[in-house]
Amino acid sequence: EAARPAPDRALAWFTDPGWVLQRTEEQMGNTYFAGDALPVAYPVSISLVAITAAYLGCPYHVHPDSMTGWADPILTDLEQATLLAFDRQGEWWRISEQLLQAAGERAQGRYLIGVPDLNGPGELLARLRGTQDLAFDCLDQPEVVKRARARLDALWLEMWQAANSLVRRWQDSY
Image (cartoon, rainbow, N blue to C red; front, side):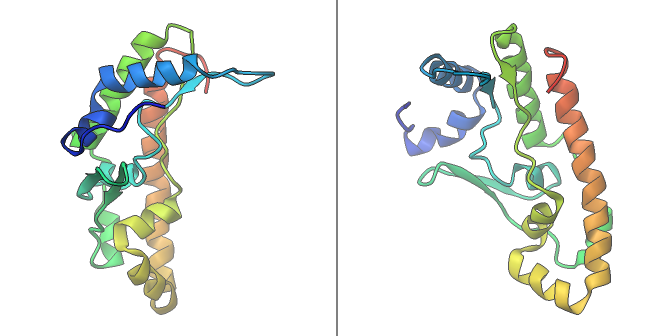
């Protein structure tokens, strides 16, 4: 397994395409894919939990101690969920695009490319609102929760379609 980076390099560990893909290809090269197992690279690390919330505007942080990413909630009221939009010009989507693009160019049929871990819409709603506030919302205003969830269902599909369309440039299916 690759050595952890120095704390001041934690962000690059997850976002520098050269570093990410070198590490990923080394890991796949050291893995025996038996039976029907397939080599799949996830250039947008599954350790970047909550990245979907960043695609919707949440401040996002990579923590060097845990080597994971976390998003700060942005919804102070669930009614605000109707205003959310997938920001294709946002920092974290651009980083994800760069990583997927670089992986596609390097894979050349040697391995498949996986889309980012987009979490489910319900989990995403908890990240955007905060779990405690969402729990109270479920009790106090269930219809608003349902509307917010419906909005996130549509946004989740939009994000998945965007990620999938990038990956499909280099592979026929996923």
